[in-house]
Image (tube, rainbow, N blue to C red; front, side, top):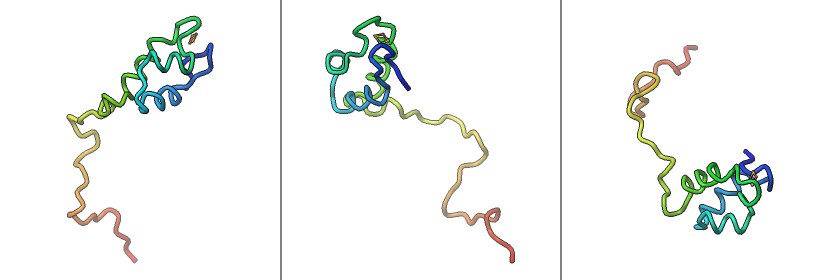
Length: 85
Ligand code: FES
């Protein structure tokens, strides 16, 4: 997804730089994101915060409920997937 329309910079590009350890200001200097109209700054900062090397678990959230029934456990044989010949 393009984050910065003015400079045509994607979230992937910002994330790649953030994972390499660059902060927002360094990424801004390197790529030019948020350096023209500034409309993308909030979104770009969010991407940096989610992907920065100092915060590697920002995207991991613990599930509080199971959405679809019981979780699958490998020790139980699955009768639904067996074939009858
Ligand atoms: S959209 Fe990024 S500076 Fe304009």
